[in-house]
Amino acid sequence: MEFNEQIKCLRKENNLTQEEMAKKLNITRQAISNWENNRNLPDFEMII
Image 1 (cartoon, rainbow, N blue to C red):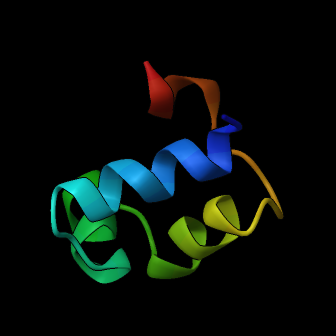
Image 2: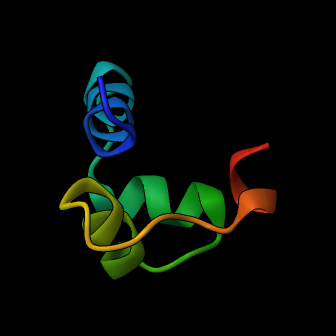
């Protein structure tokens, strides 16, 4: 499973919208969308 699939799966397992997940991570909803659509990846510090 690739990162974009993992992040989407984790978000859905926790019943979070992209907006809710973004608020928890202190990032934009667009960043979550970009990760899930494999447009870019988070900074290394974000995923540790």
